[in-house]
Length: 133
Image: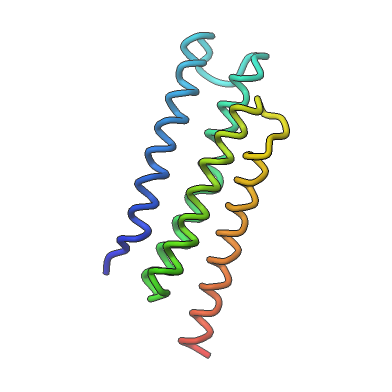
């Protein structure tokens, strides 16, 4: 079986990861800092935006892929995947532009990410219950 819907979202998140990684590498080169951060707030925000993507995106994509493999409607997978991707983009943008502080895009991004994970979890529970009663 293939998971074409999840594959598209994984590709987009992969590109986002490369963008955020490049952003962090520029700071590492600027400060010649191979590990950790300096007291530069923008550097710290870039590292956390990257790390937060790595913390949330893999589980979200894994759950989407399992849902798609289990036969949950591609339309549902699409909308939940859109919430996950848009949430991750908003979070990263808000984290970087808010310099790690409170930012509306960061909060909206987290809310969308959590909603996507919650909805996918419920869809997976529902699917397993439908199949195995």
